[in-house]
Length: 112
Image 1 (tube, rainbow, N blue to C red):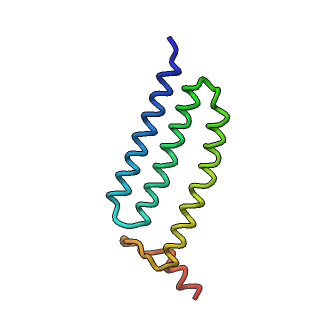
Image 2 (cartoon, rainbow, N blue to C red):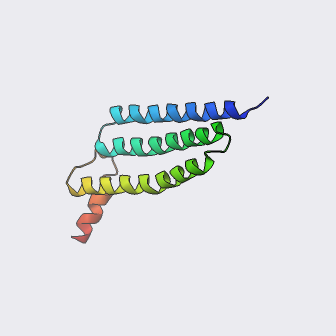
Image 3 (cartoon, rainbow, N blue to C red):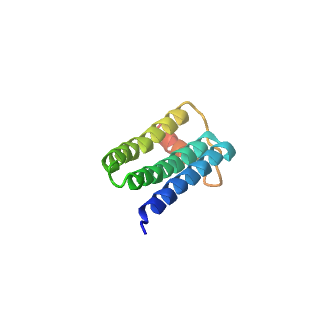
């Protein structure tokens, strides 16, 4: 019995479910920063699982391409999310904060 097709199916299904949870988070979370966090974290993890499933389904023939895509995604997604959230904060789009407040705003005031 070959377990590789089952593993590939589970990886792709798991990636799709995590991506779906990220999309639900984008719809349900209260502010743009929380939505961005849900989209970036769940999107990256879901894509990683789908790429791993693709590599497993192709019996390793696409493993190099999947690994390259994975490396590009892991390098660019956190940087892009950070840059977008930093630009939003500088544009005075304020997050909904809890009892701890906005640490980035406190730092900015300290340096002004």
